[in-house]
Amino acid sequence: MFLKLRPLFYSLIFLGGLELIVFFHRHVLIILLFLMFFSFFQGHWMGRKWSFSVLPVLFSISSGVLLYLITLSFEQQIFILLAFLMYYLSLFGAYRLGQYDGDKTASGMNMSSAMSTLFFVFSSSFGIYLNFLVPLYWLILTYLIATLLVSYQYLIIIKKEDKKIVWIYSFLLALVMGEVIWVLSFWPFGYLTVGTVALIIYYIEWDLIRSYFLENLSRKKMATNFVFFSTMIALILTSSKWLPSL
Image 1: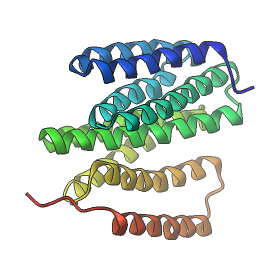
Image 2: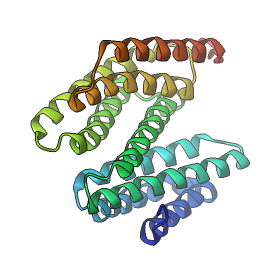
Image 3: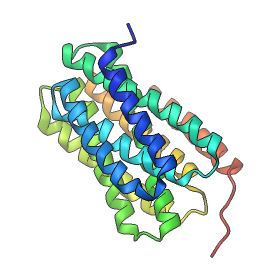
């Protein structure tokens, strides 16, 4: 059953918060603070662990920022609907994992929510960096923290018996993504393109660690992922519009 009243109700509150940003954009910071604290407690109550608050909190903040960067009304409404669905998925996945941490379907929901959250964080933070002249170190720090927390909250699900190892690998992922965004910051592309490329690079690294934890890592899988995702990145970059140089 993919419909649960409590996660749905809280997701509707989240949707209402995004609509408030559209109509009262001058108060975006206040609305984001409300959504952040609201999501923190709901994630914890749903999953019965603090780690399940990571996705709703980061997703709320990044969704609000991305929505603020969208100017066309119909695009805003489409974005709000998609964000609402992903927010519900994150809460519903947390709820099911809180009931039974071996739920494979819920783990898949959590993985999808984690990737969506990172894409939103990567894109929104780079959008703020481009549009508001934020110092580069803040951008790198945002990538570091988001990657660390999101990686930990997923990897601990599949290797719950060794938190220290999970923290170490999560920190390594965070360091790599910090280096990645430093390089990407020199590229002449928009925030959605950079966010997509950053997510692909993260997924390649994340999948290696995940496969290692699950003991199904192979050279063939590594080579296949590298070729496939390298091709995807090349296609994205060749089809993306370059930003004018300053």
